[in-house]
Amino acid sequence: MRHIAILILLLGITACIPAGRDDYAAPPARPQLATDLAVLSTAPQPTQPSPWQASSVSANAQKVASGTYVVQPGDTLRGIANQTGAGSQIIASANGLVEPYVIHPGQRLKITGGRYHAVNSGETGIAIARAYGASWREVVELNALEDPYILRVGQKLLLPASAPKDLSSLSVEQRAAAFDLDIDDIVTGGQPALADGAAVKEPSDWRKAIAPNTAIATPGAFSGRFIWPVNGTVISSFGSKGGGKVNDGLNIGVAKGTPIRASAGGVVAYSGDEIGVFGGLILINHGSGWVTAYGHADKLNVTRGQKVNAGQVIGLAGESGYVQEPQLHFEIRKDRKPVDPNIHLPKNS
View (tube, rainbow, N blue to C red):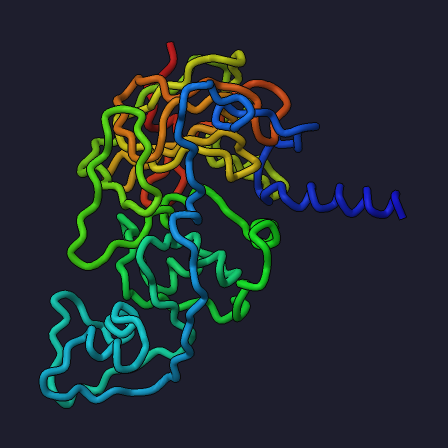
């Protein structure tokens, strides 16, 4: 029985390595990050909340039947959504309505059936997906969510039909084990919901704890010009590696402790280690749909909501995550899609 248990454990670890990743192997032990409680300095430092911990989610989904609604005098799109239980954005999309969503008495609107979750204050998209055991990526596509991906209190999100009814009876650990998370999830689902009329918080110029239930303003226009985050040797390039393996960025070999510099100015969207394959990970939102990712860090020097400048040290390189030698995994994403960093970085001399 002991041998069977060990085999099951090894299979479980193997299953955690995302398909399509290149040059990754599970480390013999999880390295400690500077954000771990065991290695924090004696000075009080805020710990980073997980993107799904801004507010606990009550699985309140209501089933809505498909049908047709005939617009009455005085109706508004939001009022129709409240009457039918469907999301206003889903109704608009299903009927080809665009802002300012003008409707007329007698107009027949298609109501898309399914299970809808009513968003509560502080809930993040990731937390909502986890509560239902759903894929957040599917929720984004189903509801046609767009940048900056900030949910509003009362907004109704259509859930994937394949999602289980409710995972509220499971422990936090059981939910975590059953939940898949990647960079795109954090970018699109890491911001907490806002009440109508509430404003996002402006980013901080220094490392300061931001309340987990506070949405952070993201930068405006960005030119798309980047600098190298470290000087080192590219040990794995961008793109297909054959056999279904793909690298979404560059893996750059450097000495442990090498300073990692922000490739461009922006706002830290995430700083933590919830994606096991990357270990210590920092995501910076630069605006205009541009995001950079920095993985395998040994130390994280920035916090969510912090404003950073190009060239600013944001952490130290290491071998956290599923690698066995010090390196930096670096990605550039535009409108959620990974692009080849070599196209956007200056040529190395």
